[in-house]
Length: 237
Ligand code: TMP
Image 1 (tube, protein in one colour):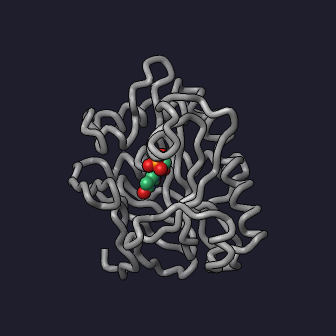
Image 2: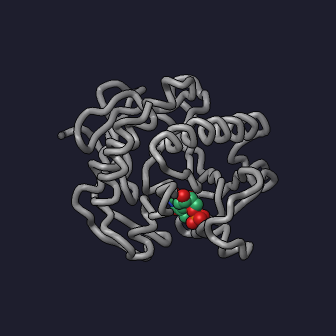
Image 3: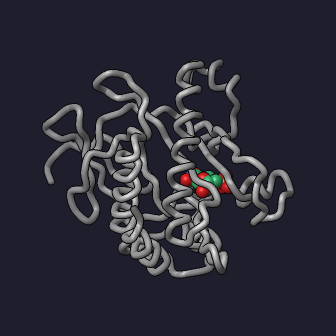
């Protein structure tokens, strides 16, 4: 693979292709948590996240939620539309867990009366601090109409993903989205990845964790857990 690498993140590498409007994403086997403080190489993780993310982006595209995904190329690679990533982590929560439980003292597993959207400023050096709409506008990260679209899309994604996971006996506890501006026309689309690295997913019957918390908390075998999730997703519509 001789094409030029544009960017290397914690979990993926991005390469140019012959078409400037299209990029190649290669999922790595690296796992990190707590802003990179915990690290491991987990053989097979890149393939699993590539397959799961491809499946979910494909369903979202078919349900009318535009995203950067074009097609899967191989076990570890997918083609995506070129975007400039908006430096926001958009977190949607349905059930209390993780930093929400820690910050507000709400017991993990408590269903939220209504879903919550939170914004974090994507900046490793600052540790991705939580910010609000006013900070986002003040820092020119996004304008009013961008924020309306991002919030609406985040809610639409939540509805579609909840339905998909509900159909395979999985609770969608929370997840993180990223958005980008298309290089071609500046339109905002859903980008990055949607995988058990970026979602909290629990078995509906047992509340067994089927996501990266097994790595964060050392409570299970990540490839085995992701493989089981992939098998269940194969039956999803
Ligand atoms: P949190 O409870 O740690 O704030 O995480 C909320 C959701 O966002 C959870 O599904 C994991 C995901 N997430 C990421 O994808 N990347 C991150 O850097 C963090 C902190 C969380």
